[in-house]
Amino acid sequence: MIRFYSTNGMAPEVGLAAALLQGQAPDRGLYLPRPLPVLRSGLLRRAFDLAYPELAAEVLWPYVEGTFAREVLDEICADAYTYEVPLERVSGRAHVMRLDQGPTASFKDFAARFMGRALGRLVREQGRELLILTATSGDTGSAVASAFLGVPGIRVLILFPIREVSDRQRKQMTTLGGNVATLALDGKFDHCQALVKRAFADPELADLNLSSANSINIGRLLPQSVYYLWAASRLTDVGGGERIVVSVPSGNFGNMMGGMLAWHAGLPIARMVIATNANDEVPRFLSTGRYQMIEPSRECISNAMNVGHPSNLARLVDLYGGWMDETGAVRRAPDIGGLRRDLFGVSIDDEATRATIERVWKVHRVLLEPHGAVGWAGLERFWGRHPEHRDTPAVSLETAHPAKFPEEVRALTGVEPVVPPSLQGLDARPESYRPIANSYEDFKSLLQKEYA
Ligand SMILES: *Cc1c(COP(=O)(O)O)cnc(C)c1O
Image (cartoon, rainbow, N blue to C red; front, side, top):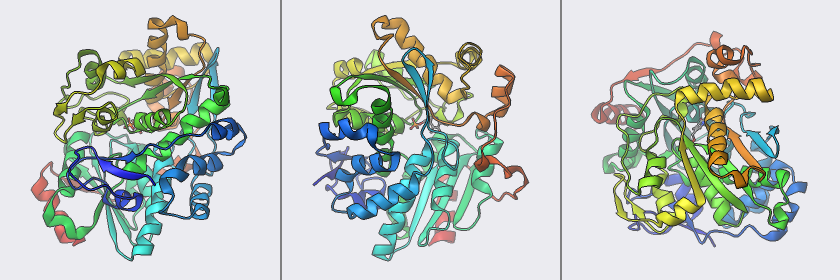
């Protein structure tokens, strides 16, 4: 059976239920599965014939076995994945996969909807209350709020950087009410993330039963491995071992880690492009072998990727034999050669992001938003360096709906993105959020006063 170990190596291995409920390991490390499951060749061959919820249940079953019955997992997936996962051809054998068709119009819905349902069941079975703390750079907050809204036994508190989320992103989290509350932090996403992480590690807050719906929670990564197989099975002869290039616009690198888990489980990936905005600490790490976080993080139009110290780097380093602790210090060097062989790191600035949105619309009539444009531009840079891959099947992930960034998209393409039903009517709804300073003491006393 699969267990979950901490990247810091000083906490006991746990089952899936404990990993989901705790979020972060008690030694401040991040959980990873051991052993990694194997994507069987039978599943790779059958994948094309499965609907998305069926494929999700197949991929997730090895992780879930022992925690939920198979029927329960089937039910969770059928209930969570009720929307399309379209692949749109851009040119040649290269596609974008639109992961933006869920209820909050970003790829965060895939994981949040699984977690909301899984945690809801665990809380019911165990009869204890849970407080989900979530830091968001824009899209996690709304996905988590939507997925956990009204789940009995769970309260949700979301921290977002007041000046770094768009109006629509903010309204998606602040207009729900019920068991969802929001704090507007006078600071950056990294500060939100740091406060949340510190609260988890604070023994004086242990009574609050805190958990995380950030990608420090392994529950975020597992569902994010499914759509890599979905794309490969639709675009290649995955059962025959044909390989695919994937490009992942990345901030906290949870999406990339989902793909990594699938890859290491046997999905035939030729190369993974990891495309960041100007927060290029990971591409730099790949090229120099030295890790230097960016503090403060740089503000870019792909705002959900404004991350100067990505949590999931510790997992990536672990997967390649190294050890990065919770402060970002590399305590044992990973196999940097292996990382360079598998990953192609690239940083795309705002100017190139805008030029990509404009050009891809003009030339291919495919509408991108800033995050997806970073991914696509990253893929093009990869082709520039590796022309031998120009005809390898490729997929670039479009992680948000263009209607989340209407001003930018309109200015660059002249197109008014069609607003999906999930984003309609937001403007009229009353908002409720509380401002908070970037101070752990303030945050902690609020938690103790309101949630103890
Ligand atoms: C969160 C987010 C990203 C970055 O994903 P990570 O898993 O943090 O790397 C990219 N695009 C959008 C639209 C997002 O919301």
